Image (cartoon, rainbow, N blue to C red; front, side, top):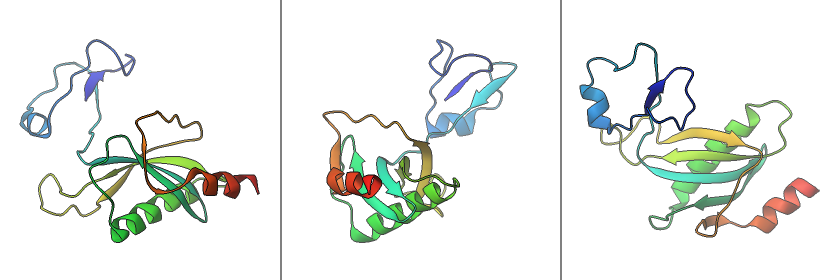
Length: 141
């Protein structure tokens, strides 16, 4: 994704490029440009505390997560929450990549895409692991 500096993230001049288009780009079309990469993979939201994970959701599920994948996703989400001092909980948005851009297996299969304290959930969000009740109880007590 590319857009001019001092423009909003939803500006008309935003360009969405595929991985291959970005690699082939020899010059940026604007004098001052922001470039943000959005790797392909499963976009997951994890409700986590510094002690553990209570819930993993996904908008469009691509099948169940394996126990090994859940452990890695949970480890990264907990690390993200622990990275902010005194943070009691957060919704951590992650990208779980099965393949890298240049390699078959990515060196870091789980990337943190963002952290929020005001997550929004929609009717088409699916629970992939855990449940909301456990999360609610963990932050209330």
